[in-house]
Image (cartoon, rainbow, N blue to C red; front, side):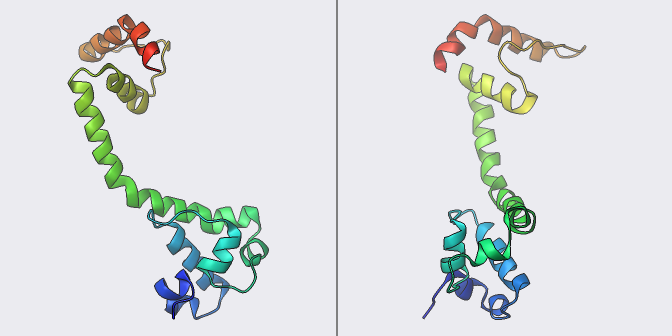
Length: 147
């Protein structure tokens, strides 16, 4: 009978019973975008299958937990959902190219770090960008209504 995620997914690591093995089990679990990010108590009980709900808090104080577990797990998690974000970005670009004003605004905010009302310096060769910015500025009232 499977008692916890750690036994099911990383039996060989968790069976070592070491702090390093349990750290790897937590990183493996937390880096999966399909898993919710549980509380540290649930990590202790459900993910690691420990008897004590304070195991994670006791073993890894907050700063150590962030450095050794949460940071690496979040980096892996982001890498795993990056392909999905690229499809979202593509859809956003397509909407912007079709003239969707909100999509145009989001493209410039996301990829050019543009903020409404921000002064923009243009360099030679940016005629298309300049026209788009003029378009956005001409329609700022409409953009404000979309918020």
